[in-house]
Picture 1 (cartoon, rainbow, N blue to C red):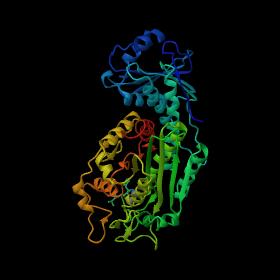
Picture 2: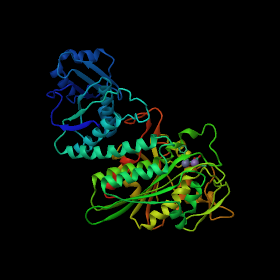
Picture 3: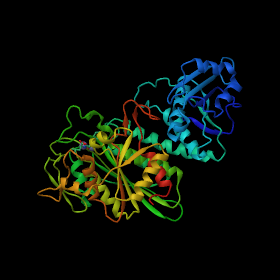
Picture 4: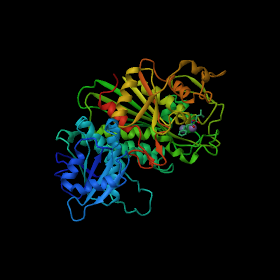
Length: 496
Ligand code: BES
Ligand code: MN
Ligand code: ZN
C-alpha cells in the first residue's frame, strides 16, 4: 500500500504524533525554526545541537529519541544556507527526512520545512513526490519479501488547504513514475514487447483509453522497414503500441509522446562487447516506460482540452540467422532508404517509423524519449537528459516542465552541418555517423522522419534512466525519469 500523504495546517510547535522531521538551515538563519524547537523541546536540545557535529548541511540528518514524549522521535535534516534553498533542496531534504524516519520504523510522520517563501502548491507537490518516490522499493523478484519499514501516514506541516489538490496530483504522477521504474527494472525476460503491450492494455482498461496494437504484418503493410529490420532478429514478435487519451470536452491540442521500446539491445551483429554493459540493456525501453507511466498519470488526472497519443515501436535487438546484416539497406515508412552501417544504432531505426506514424496523426507537437546514445551519457552524465528541438517554444516549455518536476533537461544543438556524417554513397542516409557528436547526429537522423510543420522535440535519457547508487529522490536502480516532465508539460496544455 502506498504511503498516505496529507497537508496539515499544524506546525512544529503544536503537531503531536509519533515522529516529527524538521528542516534546519545551517548557521543561525533567524527563520524562527530554532526558536520554535527550543520552545517545544527545551534549550537543552539546541545546546546539544551546537555541541554536536550536526551542521545542518544539505543531506545531513540527525535522529533524536525523545523518550516518553510526543513525538517520540525528532528527525533534524540539514538544508544548507537559506540563500541556496529552493525546490530542489526541498525535495532532497524531504527525501532524507522520509528515509531516516522509515529506517527508524516510524508509522506516523510529520514533516516541517521552511516553505513560506515558495508557492504552496509547488512546495506541496515537491514534498509529496519526495516522500513517496524516496520510499519506493521493488521486491517483485525476491522469493520472500524482506521486511521493510515504511511510514503509513505522512503529514506535510504548515500547508494550507489549497495545497491538498497538488498532493492528489502528485499521487497520480508518482503512480506513473513507479510504473516506469517497475518496467525499466524488470528483466528482459519479463519486460518483453508483449508485456509492454499488456501494460498499455491494462491502462486502457482501467482508465477507459483507446488502444491499438499493430502486429508485424500490420507494420509490414504500413511499410515500416526500419523498425521491422531491428525486430527481425528476435524470436519475440514486435508490438507497435498506440494508446490514446481523449478529453471529455473539446480538443484544443493534440500531442504525441513517442518512447523507444527496445526491451533488450544486444547490439545485433555489431554486438555489444566487454565494458558496454550489455547486461544492463534491459533498460533500453526507458523511453517507453516513461511514456507509459505518463499515460497512466494523464489517464488519472484527465486534463481538459488536450488529446494525447502514446506510441511505442517495441521489439528486441538480437542476433540470429534472420537478424539484419550490418550493411543492409532498408526502406522506412516515409520512403527513405537507410544503409544500416551499424546494427547497434537500432533505436533510431525503430523511432524513424514511430515518428512517421506520429506525424500522420497531424499533431500540434511530438516529443520522443529514448535511451538513444552512449555519447549523451558522456556529455551530460546521469543527472541531465539531452533535449533537441528546432522549436524554441517547445524546448523552453519542456525544460520548464522538467524543472517543476525536479528533472533536469539541457538543450543541445541540432547542428545541420553535422548531418553530413550520415551521408551514404548508396542509400538516402546511413543510420550511424562518426563518434564525435554522436548524440547530435542521432537527433539529426530522427529529424529526417518528422514532418517539418510538426513541432518536435527529442529527449535522450540514456544517462538518466538508471542510477547505480541512487540519487536525490531515486533509490538505486530505475529512476522513472521523464514521467514528471511529460505530465507537467501535457497538463500545462502542451507547446507554446
Ligand atoms: N541503447 C544504446 C544507447 C545506450 C548506451 C544507452 C549506453 C544507455 C547506455 C543504443 O542503442 C546504442 O547502442 N547506441 C550506440 C550508437 C552507436 C552505434 C552510433 C552507442 O551509443 O554506442
Ligand atoms: Mn544499440
Ligand atoms: Zn539501444
